[in-house]
Length: 195
Image (cartoon, rainbow, N blue to C red; front, top):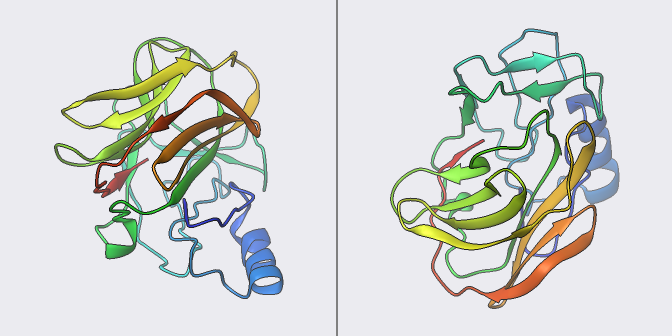
């Protein structure tokens, strides 16, 4: 998760991220949550390697899986039945009406129903994910999907997805290509995130 116009490589191992972050960006203060899925298979420990170093709490069967792996020899595995991670409430996660980028690498084993990559707790909190399995979109918890568009994604492959707001324009990306249209979105966004 990044604020402003920063970018990251997403799901790097914590060792790779620390090397990258310290050498390239000097510890980028606009990266406010960065979780690598690497670790010992079956582990329920996930590290935030941003400057905040938030404690991430697992629920359900959330765990490190050896395969499939995009970076660092592992990935976060969610079986679709009540699995998620939470991050504590910190002021850096409240985007208000400012610019932000939320991004993740995802590997979909199935595409059905509504499910979220990131979701804020409480009514009106931002969520970002998949509607009816095949559309990518965003909205506000307990309010509505604000926008969803066909993702063009299939199962069994890694994709980089992103939700970006610059000014009042909010856009969705799959593998660096904008999908759908720019959507005007001026709502203040509160975000105590679950992943």
